[in-house]
Length: 444
Image 1 (cartoon, rainbow, N blue to C red):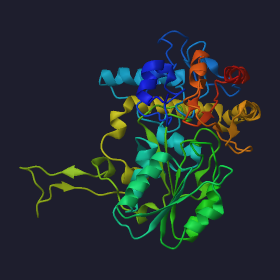
Image 2: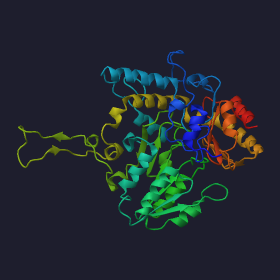
Image 3: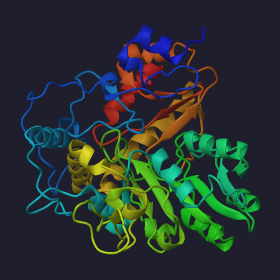
Image 4: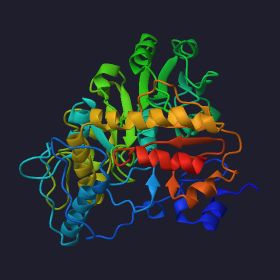
């Protein structure tokens, strides 16, 4: 019997949410309340950032319920306890209408860490090249609009079948309206060949869209090679970096890409509703503002009667100031209305920085290599490259979601990502080899 997502959640309970998501494995409408992160406030000692000699695993840093094995960080990462505490403090200040201290941008001294600056440091960008967005998809939509591709159909966009499905859906909707969209098919060994991308490009290519690490199987593009090819054809490059930022060292300048976007609820250990958009500073003067709001103009001032300035009536005076990513892509009260989320994310980025992304990756790789070695023994086809260094490892098997595996994993209290015919595991800093063995026992 095939169940849809709603039936599955009703029949199997909240913990099923990211263990089995129905025929298409879609996580829409799933919240953290469905996940096993429910230790009551005040149940442990106050949390602190890891010290310079931090060791792994970091189980005590998170409030995962005892007895659960969570190997699904690439769906949504548990929030560090230190960040939950930061959110509580920000909520208390917000409730009392007392502003939080001005951000220092460095996470030290007076004030609070600035997520924009911390993220810029994480990917080797300038803070002025970073804008807040609500999600990865919001960032991708803004880039397409900034290039006029949502209404000016005189060029083409090149992407591939391993790019995020939501972004492909966006492009296919634009294709219905007249945009030439070219989707490169993955190879039989579950990757995207650079030569196939090159064959899809021509002098009319305006944008190349890829994922730095594929949601499905973690496939990693050579972004520098992609950028060089695109630029040689006069095109820009946008990368979805949600499965890379925080998961492994990433230097956006070294890649040469023009735009990148990511939510924060995965490897940045933040929450839903707040993410980042990177726009290379040299590109900003060449694009149009896809949205306009008063946060973008530093010198906005309204003129009200009876004290109007002399001369022709002007309802408002404003100037754009220096071009920054925020002045192009932020609108309205995003940062103000998410003050608690900003405080949480600042703390999470400080936590990631304290551990070190390279150390996080080094801890995770042996766990992934063990999975790559053992899972195929159970009849699964490995679809992640053997030498991949990202956070995701995936395996394919026909009819997986309709098999008894979802119920067996739930019974064992093991949480992984299941699609219709595939399974993805993404261990993180709180996992150890015992967690991997517990999953393998459930698989058997």
